[in-house]
Amino acid sequence: MKKILIATHNKAKEEYFKKLLNEFNLDFISLAGLNIKEDAPEEEADEVGNALSKARFYMEKSREISLADDAGMYMDALGGKPGVQVRRWMGKFPDNISDKDWLDFFLKKMKGIPREKRSGKFKITRAIVTPGGEEFIIKWVREFFVAEEPNWDNYQKGWPMSTLYIEKGIGRSWVGMSWEERLKLEKNNLIEFKKIFNKIYK
Image 1 (spheres, rainbow, N blue to C red):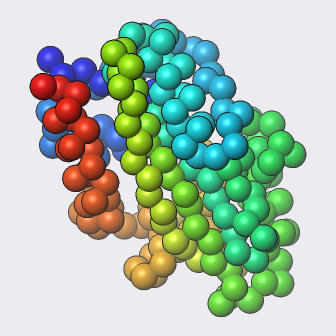
Image 2: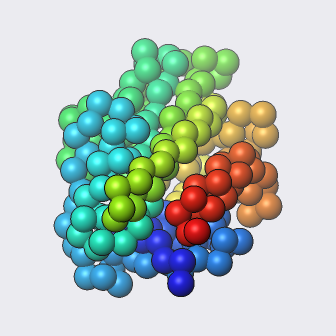
């Protein structure tokens, strides 16, 4: 059986990866299913370091092939902030800050910035680590604009940016897209996943 651990405590993210990788006929394992409650360290300087750190940590805990990811958010009008520590805003907040408190802070930072300058990007890294010592990474950059007012119809718990996020080139939120549209954006990433799985599951 081709098993893989989705190395996250975020249920929404776990379900997303299951849907994303459905075509590969994998046996998905969860941290909850293995009763792993520890949080992996996320103290590296960039998304690649954090994604690898998490994948290595949970691979050691489970001794299973492990997939983890990490994302940094870089707002052009804020000089690239908050960067790699999105939720903690470079250490200003604890991990458990509420979505509303984070969103209120972010909107104050963006107050008065005109529509044409409310651009940013997510730098995303997916990392896969095997018990045999193999390590693979996939990098993805998503460009977006931030709305001036939150749209709570698009709200996804655990992701306050879902109320503001507008995908560049599409003009709609990620949450508001169909699954087919999301897969289209992930097309190149799925090609990379296939190459990696072909190497791992020989």
